[in-house]
Structures are given as C-alpha cells and as structure tokens.
Amino acid sequence: MLTLFIFCVQCSMSNLAYGQGKWADKARQAVFSVVTYGADGKMLGTGNGFFVSEDGVALSDYALFKGAVRAEIVNTDGKRLQVQEIMGANEMYDVLKFKVALNGQKAAALTVAPNAPTTGATIYLLPYSTQKNTALTQGKVKEVSRVSGTYQYYTLDLPLQDKMVSCPLMDANGQVFALAQQNSDDTDKSTCYAIDARYAMAQEINALSLNDGSLSGIGIKKALPDIEEQALVTLYMASTSTSKEGYAMLLDDFVAKFPNSSDGYIRRANNTLGISLDEASLAKAEADIDKALEVAEDKAEAHYDRASLIYNYQLTNPENVYKDWTYDKALSEVREALAGNSLPAYSQLEADILFAMQRYAEAYEAIEKVNESPLASAATWYSAAHCKEMMQAPADEILALMDKCVGTFTPPYTEAAAPYLLERARMYADAEKYRPALQDYEEYYKAVNGKVNDQFFYLRGQCAMHAKAFQRALDDFTEAVELNPDELTYRAELAVVNMRVGRNEEAVRVLDEAIAKDADYAELYRLKGLALLQQKKNKNARAAFNKAKELGDPQVDALIEKYFN
Image (tube, rainbow, N blue to C red; front, side, top):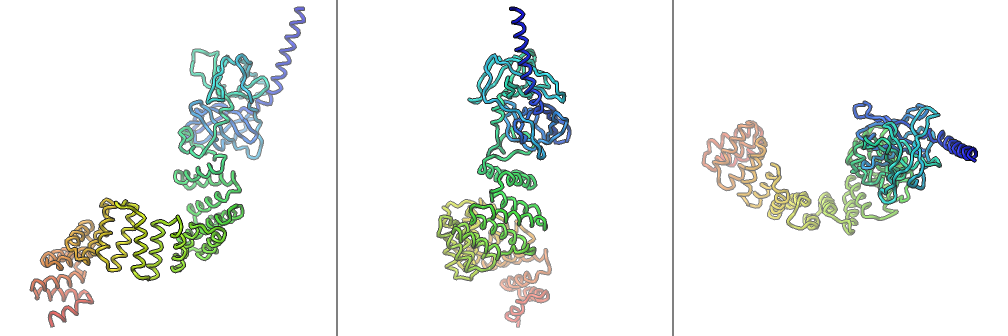
C-alpha cells in the first residue's frame, strides 16, 4: 500500500510539472527586460515587464520609469524594441502601463486572470530569461487585502530577488494575477508583495492627465485618452503647455486614433501652418482640411473651420496667396456653412471676411445678425460701429452702436472695458464732441489703474484743450513730455496751451527747450514768434518767423504779411 501511495504522489507531481511546463514555455516569451534612459542619454535603470496584449500593451513598475525620457525593452530573443507611449501610472502602488512599438508584429502576451487566487493557493513567479529552461519560483499566497475596492494586494510566501521585481506572478492555470514588487523589509527574505495585474491594467490616461504628477514625472510621450471627447480636451490643454513640434506629434496620434474625427485634421492643419508656411506645409494643411470635410458628420461645421483657416492664412500672409486660398474662397466656404446651419458664429466669420474685403455694408449686415442673437457682445457691437465708420455713416449712428458696446459693461469699469472706452473717446473726438470724449478718457484711465503711456496723455490733452479744460490739458501734455522728452510734438502742444491761457513766457521757455533738441523744427519757431508777439517783442518775433520761413514752414508767410507788412 505504501508503494502504491508513493507511486500515485509521484504521478501527481509529474502531471503538475508537465502542466506548468506546457504554459510556462509559452508564457516566458511575454516577459522582457526594460532599460530606461535619462535626459542626458545615459542609462537610468533596468528592470522587468511583460506583455498583456498582442498589440504591445505591457506592465512594469513606475519607479523604473520615473525621470526617463526614453525606454526600450529586450525580449527573450534579445531583440530591442522602443517604448512608444505611457498609457497610465500610479506612483503610490508602483505600477505602470505602457505600449511597445512592435513595428507591425504581434507580441506573445499573458492572459490576465479574471479571479484572484485565495489564501494558501500555490503560485509561480515567471522570471525574465533568454534561456528556455529557466525554472519557475514557486510560493504560496499568504494574505490578500483590498486595493481601490475591487482589486487585490498580496502578501506572498515566496523569496524575491531584486532582478525579479515586476516579473509576472502566475496561477496554476498559467494566467497572470499580479506583479512582483520590491520588498521594503530586508530582514524577511522569504516574504514578498504583489499588486493585482488588473489594477495595473485599469490605469489609464484621461483629460486631466496632463496635470497628473505621476505622469508628468516621466518624459516619455503619453497616450491619448480612449474617449474622443476626453482626447479633445487633452489636445486643448496641450496646445498651450507643449511646443508646436510636441503638439504636432500629439495631433498625429489623435488622427491615427480617431481617423473619422474632423477636429483632428482641422487642428493639425492649423498647427502645421503655425510651424511652417513652406509649400510642403501648405500642401499638408490643404490635405487635412479636405479630409476634414470628407469625414465630417457636421458638414456645416467643417466648412466653417475651412473658412476660418483660409481667412486667417490670407489675413496674415496677403503677399503669399496659396492656390485658391483667397478671401473669396473663405467667403464661399463660410456661406456653405451658413447654408447648412445659420449659426451666429458663422455670421461673425462672414462679417470678418467681408470687412477684410472692404465690403463694409455687407459686413455690417452680417454682424447685425450676430447682434440680434445671444452671441452679441462688446466686440460685435464694436465691429458694427467700425463698419459704419468705414462706410462714413453719420457720427450719431456710429456712436449709438458704441454706446451699446460700452453698455455691455457695468461701472466701475474694469480692464475688459478699457479698449472700448478708448475707441469711443476717439470717435467722440472725431465727431468734435470733446466733453463726452474727455469723460471716456477719464474712465479709461481708472479702468487701467493709471497704467498709461505718453500717447494717452497726448490724446487726452488734445481733447481737454478743445473742451477748454486747459488745466487738464497742461497737466497731460506735461506728463507726455516727462514720459517721452524726445517727442517734440508734445512740447509744441504744451506751448500752445500755455499761450491759450496767457502764459506766453512759459510757452517761449518750453519752445526754447524743444529747439535745443531740434533746431530744424520749423513749427517751433513759428509758435515762438506768436508767443513773442503776445509779449510785444516784435523784433524777436520777426526773427523767429524768418527762421520758420527759412526752414520751409508753409504757414508763416501769412503771419509775416499780417503782422509786419
């Protein structure tokens, strides 16, 4: 009986070993070595990983990749393959999901176990090796705890060497259930730990991953989210946080991942033109906007995007027309969009294009449609006023539109309202309505917290002089001179205001300072002559007029005739 029992045990062990060998030889091909490199090109670290899908998705430990800008794997055949992109990471549990560039080949991949082994179950560590007969390391599940609700963290009765970190842990069926992890307790060599492979597989990129500290700690390219809407958000965020070249690579990935999304082609076309305007780039952009129209579900939106791209190109490169990329072409495209869907945004673009074509009456009609919609804003009311201005409409019509423009803001005004206040001030001044113009200049000054330049003081000073607010004019021209002492126009205006208030001696002093800077400025001598006349210094005045005449002042002859002949 004892002999029979020993024979049965031996048969059972032989069958088990045969079962392990059957899956182990195949599974071993899925395990590989990983080499990571830093920004200096030097090797950063080495470790292990394994494939979990035939298309190159793999798992390893996060610590190995932290700080890396490049990584490659070495498979069991000794072949080196590049890590293509990072697909997800968790620094706390030291797991990383990534994809390897297989160059059209398929990977030998492990199957992830759907169920976790229980306490006491026999498990096996599958090491990386280029040798086909490498033995498995056998152990048992000592303890199972929960991670993130549905996943497992394992304590294993299994000795672990450093070179075994991130190797796959297999159940008796040859399915991977966990990744071996570094043991932080050096005193206990017989116990190791492992994180659920399903948890590592669950790591993914989403729309907010650009702000994920774990992912940003790795310089290798990140994958796009699998959901198109999230991938578009990623593109939007990356457009302001990455280089144009890096963004171009991301756009290529988006187009490859979502080939039927017109957004990808339009964004790539715009980015291409932002990098280069050579013939090859223009041709590539043209191919992309044509493809966008081809695949678009919303043809109207695609026509709008095409119109916008062509308009912006022509607006910034008027001297270098590419094929039929003209304002006429842009107008044709946006009108195709409007024929499909009369959205206010499309009318806005139509107005912009017509304005650039100097077809101001039509541009006004287009912008009126926008102003009749919820899309009306300070900018659109200003556009309407500007159209009217270019049409040389009555000042009251122009100013009525500017009132609606400024009326979209509530006092006290902020910097958002400042440009429109400045424009309305200019338009009031052009209409010789100096008091309201001066009021707008005052509001502008407050809106920008007094952060103005010499040109502002010059413009407000002119307005104040016409409004007979002479002290304001004196103060403003004085400020303008202090901010830009070399602009003699400011000194001339300051002298004129001084003369208007009877301060002729001060006017002469200001003019002499200006003449000291430029002795050939004819107008300065004419103004000095007028100031001297007011002081009854006729001889000196005549000398100043003669100097102005010598320098070619066209207005001084009439003054000489009036006062000295």
